[in-house]
Amino acid sequence: MSNKLEEARKIINSVDEQMAKLFAERMRAAETVYEHKKEYGLPILDQKRENEVIERNSSYVEDEILKGYYIDFLKNMMSISRAYQHRLQNGLKVAYSGVEGAFAHIAAGRIFPNGNRVSYGDFKAAYDSVVKGESDVAVLPIENSYAGEVGQTMDLIFSGELFINGIYELEIHQNLLGVQGATVEDIKKVTSHPQALSQCHDYIEMRNFKTEQANNTALAAKTVAEANDISLGAIASRETAEIFGLKVLEANINKSGENTTRFAVLSKVGAKDSTLSSTVLMLTVKHEAGSLAKAISIIGQYGYNMTALRSRPMKKHSWQYYFYIEIDGTVDNENGKKMLEELKEVCDQTKVAGTFAPHTEI
Image 1 (cartoon, rainbow, N blue to C red):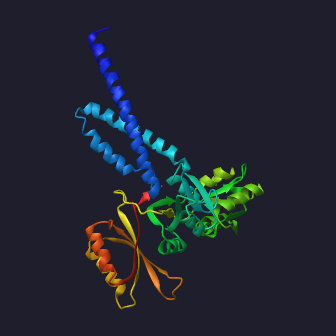
Image 2 (cartoon, one colour):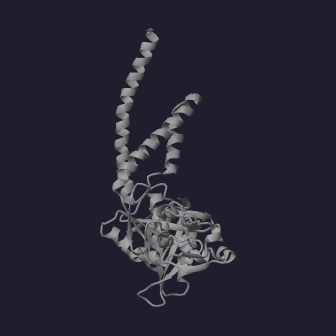
Image 3 (cartoon, one colour):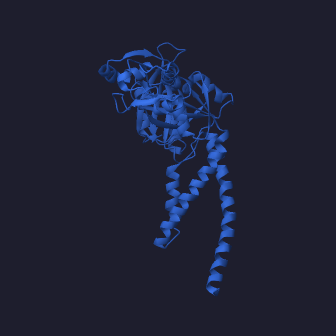
């Protein structure tokens, strides 16, 4: 064996020994990262952060050929780190409202793929489970592009103590489902949630189907599966079809191709993370002429672009309203603190409800 080969193998053995120690050290750090994500209700995959790490670390390798291999090495390392964090996540309890197969169940699974999803009967029960410590996070809908805001969730966020630590967009595709062996031509009646029936009104009219309302799309699919009747169809998601052993007879039958629901992740602690670049503010204005206009003006004066503004009636005060506002940027800085102080002059209540990364699709 040549001296050069022996020397090369010694170098490899020495480097491998160092890498093994560094690998273990890196994975211990990944545990700390996971604990942070668990506390703040953040998903394991942070693509922006991974891209930044790859760009920075690959610059340490000057050889352009080796750099490409090193980027592959980094991507593989990050994949291993995510897999380890997913294993740690097995104990995470994720509350949602509805039943298995409902869109909230699907959203919770896509955000926290290894979390333990726990079903609750309504939004408040899911929310309260986090407040009581029964669950780590809650995943609740806040808005649908077709039906508008989900007022009950917004009311809970306004009056409660949990923070938004992410808003995620789930594009909803409605499908015609039937039992195995059924065809589209066999279907005479469809069942689903009223909103889903409305979204698919044109398709239902075209097919001349009779309709029957259900409490949600998942229960509709369950009804069809249990009836085992080829003439009865359900309108629901592909995931729901898989859960109840149904067949997708026709896909994407909702009339609007842009049917998206935004889900908020709520936890006890407000997150401070560089990837969460937008903020949710909630406020009530004084009963004085122009108070709302003044509040909006103050937000603009401090350089914040307002991307959403919605009003909601306050349940305990007739004809009084609070406002839900989304802005670009965060307020945990000197500029933001000054803006919040100035808002207090025209607002009875101001609340920083949380932060999120805009347009995060799941």
